[in-house]
Length: 357
Ligand SMILES: O=c1[nH]cnc2c1ncn2[C@H]1C[C@H](O)[C@@H](CO)O1
Ligand SMILES: [Zn+2]
Image 1 (tube, helix red, strand yellow):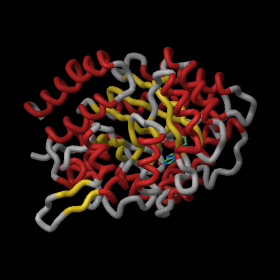
Image 2 (image 1 turned 180 degrees about the vertical axis):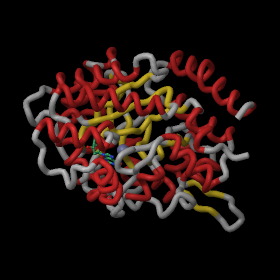
Image 3 (image 1 turned 90 degrees about the horizontal axis):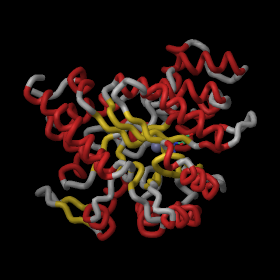
């Protein structure tokens, strides 16, 4: 029997790629807009707003997808709003059965009414603390720098400054074409000298050169998306696959791929779930993980991403556990803490579902 959505919700899941400003509740956006006087929302009806985000994000272009964030970032400019959004994020993930999450956001986008970068980070950390308490979830924070801007060094320093109080790593995001990762080389070299962890959005809206730079020039620990690694793999008619040098390197080094299937359909990085490269990459034993990217824009959750994969590829509990253990192994928290979650929470949780669904 295939795992059902309800059963998947009860499985202990791990989420490595989720944007704080892409996961707000529609009701909260409407409340916050009213409170702060933000008057540019396309509608103030939460149901219509939820639908607007999903439709506006479904253009097949990453650039247009990113325009929708003006409205979420627009209402996240005060300490109170950041605490609330982060607390609700932790609550929503816990309610979906996520036991460990790394949630990212770009502090530089939340300073328009005068908050400092440090105040922004402290507000978000406080929100995660409040929302996680007593809910069986641990949330680590990733600080993102926007790739079209020039503040990555500052944000990298911020990530190092807050590394012992909840920030577990760094990332760059935003439009990919025209903004190669090497634009931020100084920040990545600084992080490496600091023994800090980072992931890079690469191979989503641009192909192999972006992935190659992220790994071989910048030293990324993980790839955000990385779907286009498929361009370096050829599959013969009998199903045998031949890996190019970059794809082989990514697989040999066990570089984690933070795959976000629904998001990729909306930005045009994949044509359908059934044709999504995740099927082949899982079969070839790349270190694949399953993620949400932006739960609001994609109207999704960790459980729903898994359910879609079960439907498209016929995955069973062993497959779902494999993705989950992959993700936990790839997290940016210390090794002993990852192991404790794998052996103490993930394996027992899946065992229970496998034997008593
Ligand atoms: O999938 C994505 N690719 C590139 N950038 C993204 C993606 N999803 C969200 N972002 C951007 C928009 C947000 O404002 C920013 C920080 O979370 O990251
Ligand atoms: Zn992303």
